[in-house]
Image (cartoon, rainbow, N blue to C red; front, side):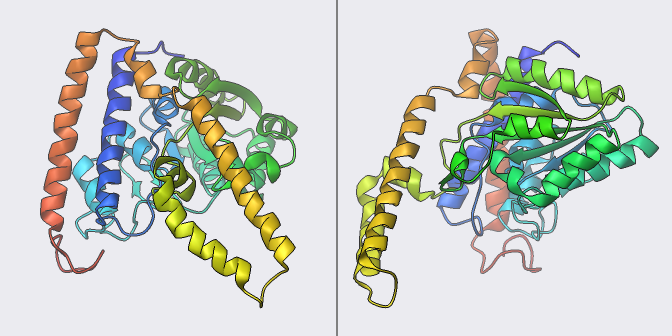
Length: 353
């Protein structure tokens, strides 16, 4: 396992954060089609892993793929044009933000929950034949562990002793459902049940992630079997941009102005369930909101980028931030200029459409 290069790690995290913030801002302005799932809050996890990968190692990504792709070295402007729906994007505007791939980086994403598992197993099988000593990495959330294809991927990886590391990012929530309310046992116990070698780390501590991931990656690379890295994380933006639970915390009056009429309408409707059932469901919404608020308050200070900054000198950090900010701004400015005032997304009429 290579020692952590703090400056490289911090540069990668800053670049990922700035790129995500630029794309979130574009989404807020209506320039990004559909939903947008940012990886803000996951930078320590991604950087702690990516800094240990070699040329032929592969990444199977989930719907929060822009940060890993940025960290892996994707062309920023091509990425941003893709997310903005331009046919000059890296996948001609057809991938959106959840299905981006870059064959040159040996990295690709699938928006189907849990799909990174079987994709990574396929990568690992190919590695054993084409590039022995290479490793496949799969990213997924804790809620994805209820998907059958992911469990099948765990099983096959162990049965065939494949060089793959599954990275489980646990923020405790499956969209707006508390994970423990819908999942038997805990992720670590379930992974061990399949025979996976398990390590864990706090996702906001990049040095801890680097150490834990390094052991599993080196083990898999040496032919000693697959691993499972369990990391905690907090996403301040919620499941997706515009998450109503986040909206309730940040702008309660605005969010309630949307919810209250809908709840009142549902409560007075005569063709649905009983009034008692409806009141119980509304109480459940309040309980979820309170639990989410508690989690946000408890983890608000766990910013991986801010913690990563403490690993290097203030002067070095400032220089890195200035350089990365300039590059990200230039890429997004050009992408916005190419898109311009378009009539639709992903149509073959030039990047200004």
